[in-house]
Structures are given as C-alpha cells and as structure tokens.
Amino acid sequence: MKRSPAPARRLACLAAAGLLVLAHPDLRAQSVSLSGSMGADKALLIIDGQPQVLAVGATARGVTLRKLADGQAQVEVAGQLLSLRLGAQPARLGAQETPANLSQIIIPMGPGGHFSTDGAINGKAISFMVDTGATAVALSQTEATRIGLDWKKGRPGVTQTANGPVPIYSINLSSVRVGNVEIANVAAVVVPAEMPLVLLGNSFLSRFNLHQEGDVLRLNKK
Image (cartoon, rainbow, N blue to C red; front, side, top):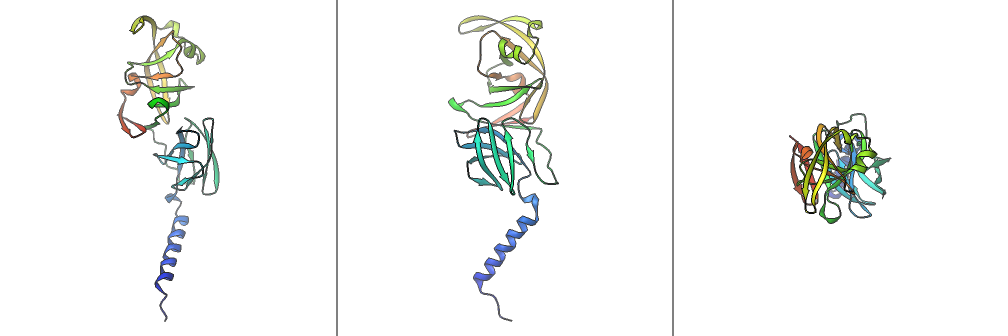
C-alpha cells in the first residue's frame, strides 16, 4: 500500500486534533465573567477562574470579545453570544458546569494605579476601591443612605485626618460581595465627606491573602 506523503500525514494529524477539540467540550471555556476594562477596547475577563485581557475582536481559550461598553461586554463562545455585566456572576456553558470560584477575587488596575471593582453591600450594588491603608470598609453618608443602611444607629466616634478631626459612625455590614466571594459580618465606618467610591479596607481585605501580578490584584480567601 502506498504511504501518504509526510505533508499529507501532518494535515491529517492537524485535522484529527481539530476534531478532538470539537469532540471534547471540556477543552473550551466553561465559565466567563467580566472583571474590568482597560481603556475603551480591552476587557479583563475571568475565563474558568483565570484572568485574560482581550481586545475587541480578539480570541483566547475559545472566547472572542465582540463588544465592550458601559460596564458590559458581549463575548462569543462556541457560536453562542453571551452578555456579561461588570461584577455579575459568571456566564456558564455546556452541560458539565464547573462551580464558581468562591475563594478568589481578581481585580484589574484602573486609572491612577488604583484597583477598583464592582460588588455589593447587603445585596445592594456598590463600586469599590481597594485601600490597604483603611482599617475598615468606609463609605459616605450619602452612599450609606442610598443603599438603606441605618448608619445613624451606629456607634459615633471621631477619626483624625490631615484636615483635622472628622465625626464617624461605626456600623456592621451583614455582607460584602466582590466577584463571586461574599464575606459576612464586616466592620465599616460612615463618614460625612463625599467619596466617589467605597473604600474596601482591611475589615474585608484581612480575610484574604493579597498578591499583585502586574496590573492584576488577586485576593485569595484564607
């Protein structure tokens, strides 16, 4: 029997490999979430628990980023279009779903070198900024009122700032969620000054081991 030329054998092997990928859905992404954006056309996606920066039109691990705007992204996986929202639960694919990573948070670096992300306090949507210098989660009176915290029943106190003493109210948050990870019973302070973001301080961060990898901050639950 005549043997196939070497190039033909190589093509046959490549074709077989392609069929193997199609035949085994576990080799493609099983979960995808939007963790942040880097500029107007790059998104930080979490694909099966691993961070991946993608530009619009680019593909990684079978995930193609189609659109990115206003805290939302559209991705395509195995011909299926999925809409992702910043801070929301991962979108899942296939019959064999992998469980969400409930022990790790991945936060991208934003403008000014700060790590910011969306999440929730007591189930109400919040935008956070990581502040390792803050003793507790800190939010303004306006934001606390917006999400329904009865902060006036908290413990009054005073904290010293560069501008002098500032009155605060110490309260306890039933839950703080960032990504897929939710922590119960988190100390917080409410301050009169307006703040664009809620400071994610050490009353939350101390529950994790922090590790920075370039423009990404990983929080691994202790």
